Length: 313
Image (tube, rainbow, N blue to C red; front, side, top):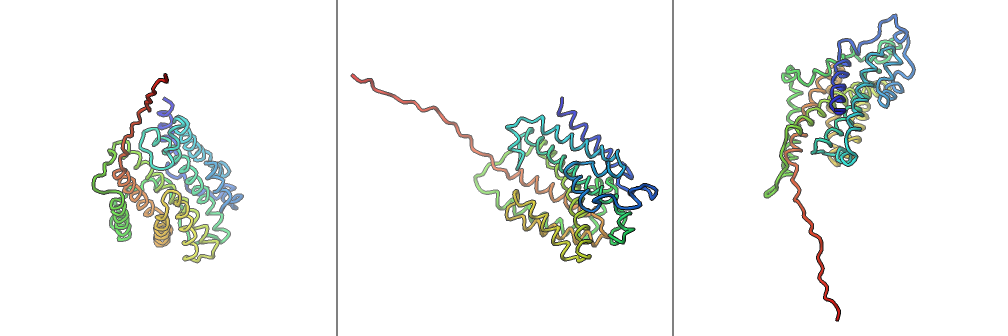
């Protein structure tokens, strides 16, 4: 019962956070709009990552703050309902329902922090622009626009999307060639595997793009006096490095992919919607291929040792 309540709470708070205008700047009459709030560029968004919603509370946006906090609490509730024996599995590629629930709970918690950081930074933009900062950025994109981006078919009309899809196909083919072979048997690909991969891909596509290309990239671009190559390389390097524990040597490719998304964000007048589209479908495809090529481990049965002794005369 507790885990179903947590799922319902997560859905409700995500819908609340995506309501129209939830990420728009405060009116000019609001105190936060006259001058930037404390730590508007880095400290407040960073704090919002750790404590989702705190930036919104400090900027008089309590409703949106509650949505982020509620999402994080819902994620924690999902993790708390899982047996401790299943938590270790949630670190890499969980195949059990319990392990996937724990992984998704952790994903909700991180996603709430990423979107809270993005929202906090974007709310401060009008005041920061009055200080002649971030003039290169356009209007903030509402969270609802980011949530709908993975399903926007208009991106299929862009050559940049097809280039990314070709890269996704190449990586998927590489995984298949490495992980498959004669005589191997694979675990069945179930409905909950597909649902899990899609849900986590959605969180990563929206949350990670909001944090890296929506907040950190503009932050570095402003700090480096709008040196594109330097600022984009910094954000892509951090993006790749954070994937190192799971991806290993492939983290270098992920960093290069992050660099391309940064270039694309700048090309799109700093809109991250196309990057969200790319990120979601890349992760969805790689999750599916990884599950499909997950080798079934042989069952080992150990019998107790039987010893025979000869009685002494």
